[in-house]
Every structure is written in structure tokens, then in C-alpha cells.
Amino acid sequence: MEIQLTLNGKAVRANVEPDMLLIDFVREKGCLSVKRGCETSNCGLCTVFMDGMPILSCSTLVARAAGHHIQTLEGLQEEAGEFTGFIADQGAEQCGFCNPGFIMNTIALLRENPDPTDDEIKAFLAGNLCRCSGYDGQLRGIRAYLDWKKGGADHG
Image (tube, rainbow, N blue to C red; front, side, top):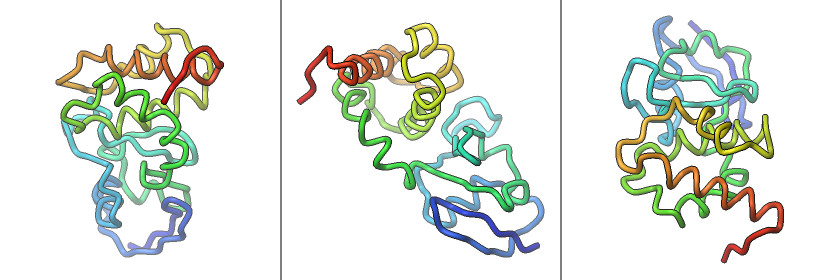
């Protein structure tokens, strides 16, 4: 079947199998930040934005994305670049496998709630699996970024 969608700002037309998952489609198009982790829609590694909202691409048929705007981390580098250094400064990247999902969901969180509490950050990121860090580093990094944005802390 033929589909059309916008991927990271570029119009894409492709012939796909009806059962093809969005994760496989975006990876075929070079968006390797989108990862397969659990295959049960529980880890957040496959998070992409569809029309600005986070979805799990491992449980979404590419046919359902037809006509929509899909963004991956590759298309959000400028927005992500603002805060990723803060997370890295906290040692939260360790193996790095979960980082793209965390970054995508942090972008979604900050778009929805630009001044979240620690509990709101934890709740929003609860769907992201990280086996290395215990989530404290990500929380500290996001909090440091928010403090920096408010002018309350330095970041070099």
C-alpha cells in the first residue's frame, strides 16, 4: 500500500506492507535514534512524535501515520540540544541506549509543562526504561536545566 507522511519536515511517499510498524519505517529512512527495546510498548525507547504528541512507534502501524507529521530525535536536534548536556553532566547517559527515548519524552514534558515539579517529571518519564542509572541522574539533569532556564544556575 502507498502512504504519504512528513518525516522530520520532509515529505515522504513509500510503498509499505500493511503490517509494517512505524519503528521499522523510520529506521529504514535513517532515523536510528528510534530503538527497539522491549517489543511490548513498555520501555519508551521507540518514542516519536506524531503531530507533536509522543507515541510508541513499536506499537503503531505505519499506515496509521499516513498523512501525519512524524518527528524523531534526528528532527529535533536543536530543541534537544538545549538540555542534553545537563543530563550528560549528571552521568545519566551511562550506556546511552535509553537516551533518545528520555530526550523525546523530556521534550514532550517541557512542551506540555515548562515548569514541572520533581514528581511531575518522575511521573512523565515513568514509561522510560533505564537499566543503568536509576533515573536520579535524568531527574537531576532536567532540574538543573530548568534552574538554568530560570537564571538560577550556571552551566558551562
